[in-house]
Every structure is written in C-alpha cells, then in structure tokens.
Image (cartoon, helix red, strand yellow):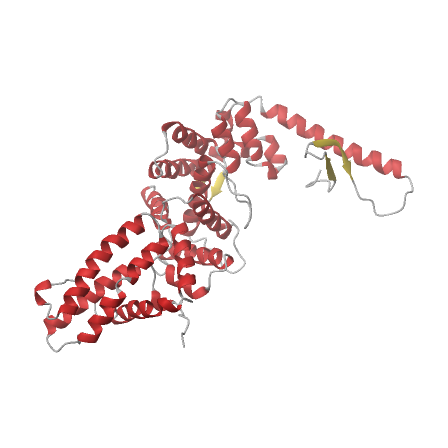
Amino acid sequence: MKEHQRYFPVKSQNGELLPYFIGVRNGDTHSLDKVVRGNEKVLRARLSDAQFFYEEDQKHTLEFYLDKLKRVVFQEKLGTISDKIERVVHITKELVELLNLDPTTARATIRAAKLCKFDLMTNMVNEFTELQGVIGEKYAAIFGEDEIVSKAIGEHYLPKEAHGQLPNTVSGAIVSIADKLDTIVGCISVGLVPTGSQDPYGLRRQAAGVLRILNHNKWELAVEELLDIAKKLFKDIKVEQEAKPDISTTLDEFFRMRATYLMRELEIEQDIVQAVLSDGINIFYYTIDRAAVLAAKRNEKDFKTKEEALVRVLNLAKKSEETVINIEQFQTDSEKQLYHAFLEVNEKFTEFEKRRNAEKALLTLSNLADPIHYFFDNNMVMDDDVKIRNNRLALINQIAELIYRYADLTKVEWKQQF
C-alpha cells in the first residue's frame, strides 16, 4: 500500500493493521464512488499477487533457494552471492569464537549466516525488494528454523540507514557485522572505493553500521582486528586485488573517517576525536569513553599541571626512537624516581585499560606529573654524554608510548588557565 500505491494503511489504537486504507484524490467529489472502486480493485489485485507469490514460495525448500544463489553475481571480481555467503560464514565463525558465545547461540548464528541471503531468490522479494530480510525471517520460521536463526536473518540487514534501528539479538548483530565487513573489505580490495557522492554499494553506511553495532553492544572487539580477519580471508581465497593504494591503509582511513563522523555526532570536539583516534579506532566504545573523559578534563583547572607534564613528554619523545633503558646509567634521584613511578603507573594503567575504565586510566597516568616535573627540573635530557642522553630519552619514550595508548594529548587544544 505505501510503497507501490501510495495509500495510507489504517491501524487500530494498539497498532494492529485494519482492513481499510486511505487514498488522496486530486479533484472534487465527482464520481467519487468509481474512484474508490478503482483503487480497491488495484489494491485487491496487488494483494492477490502477493498471496500467490507467498504460497508459491513455500512449495520449495531452503536448499532450492540457496542453490539458485550460485548463479547470481554479487560483483564481477567478488563472485556470486553464494561465494559471498561462504565468506560471511567464515567471518561469522571468527566472531563467534572471539565473543566466546555459548554453543547453542554459536550454532544458531552460523546457521543464520548460511541462510541470510536465501530470500533474495524468492518471488516475494523479486516483486517487493524492500521485503528482503523481512520475508527471509518469515519463511525461515515456516521452514522450521530456530527462532534465533530466523530473527538473525531478518536483522542482518540492519541498520538500513544512518540512524536506523540496530539488531536486537546477538546473532543478528554478528551476522550483520560479518556481512558488512565482507562487502566493505571486498569492494575496497577490488578498487571500489567511494568517491564524493558516489557510493553505489553503500559502504559508508555499512561501515557506520558496524561501528554503531560494536558501540551499542560494548563488544571487546578492536575494529582493526575485524578488518584483519576479512583482509586475510580475501588474501587466502586469492581475490584479484588492486595494487595501489595500499588496501590496509585505505581501509583504516575509511573506517577512521566513519568513526570521526559518528563521534562528532555525539558532540565530541574535533581535536579530541583526533587525539583518541591517533593510534587507531581499537575498541570503539572505549575510544568514545576516553574522548568523553578528555573533554571533561580539558576544562579542569586542577588538571592543567598534569596535562603540561604529559604533553612535554610527548613533545620531547619525537626527538629520538631510543627505548632501551639501562638503570645502571641513572645519574640522579629524580631519574630513579621517575623510572619507578613509570613502572608502578604502567602496571595500574594496564589494569584499568583492561577493565575499560577510561577515567581511572587517565587519572593513573596523571600520577606521573609530579615525577615528570621533578625530572625536568633536575636533569638536562640532551646531556653531552651520549649514553646518559640516550638513556634519558629511552625513559621519556617509554612513558610516551604509555600515554599514546590513551591518546595523543598534543592534539588536544587545552583550555588556557589564567
């Protein structure tokens, strides 16, 4: 009614569909009864067609539809839809293992991945394309599939637009990510990178969908890890890939742009977005949490001296790549104090990082501020003695590596305190 005839369906107060519709006529009331009968006739014919397709589709099996997918091309260099399903199943198995799902849910999720595209070959979807996934869920249930499986088939297309509904089930979310990763990595691997307004495969929307699902479910999955799974798969099956530009760099930048867009929608300022994304997206929900903590801390007067110490370390670390520390070459108490403070903070920071506690992780880093100030007040880092200089730079660089794990604080435009 809505898509084909532009009619308004009528529902009851509790949302139940009623056997009525509303149409709009451009004109007066002349022969209005004929207009009504004409519209009813057209709608009755459309509904009759749908019922016929619905009944005909059920005369076949799931295997019948899956077999037909072997003859439908997904993309010239990426094979058929059947080939795509095999890849989606592979990625799904990897995700199931990473998330350590219980055996029942794991089996159902993998089964859903195998069946997720079967409805593309049905009469209903061929006639009413907007029903892909929707009719798949209905038919899967009719064909006796588990509720988890049928629900995941319906949800794996979600979200369908930028702010669209996300999958409600774990299985639906996993298959959705697997399907989207296959499309994104596959298309970019063969050179189909979106440019300007051109994005025929909807890769930007799908990448945003992957990130939104990861954030919504608070999954401990690094985006880079997921991309590696898909990249390795395409390499193993020897898909003919574009030589230039570097696929990994293109994919990383592509997802980073989508992450930036989503974080800006959350009203996180650009400098902080760049700071937390400097080392990659990693675990997306934790990256967002780190950004929120930095956004709050930048305006705190008490954090000013701590920020200055950490940023000073990062600035100096750019002067050398030395990282091997020799404790026997420490010349002053301030060097030794900073080193021992670093060891203690490193241990605590790593623990809070594992717990994804962004606020405590940053507060732990800030405990280095006083030892850092004391160190700079009492030492010349660029000492004339090469061994002493390199040892001090090594200490600075190791502290910098720890800070970078949280964010590149040099990119933050810290509020000036007067």
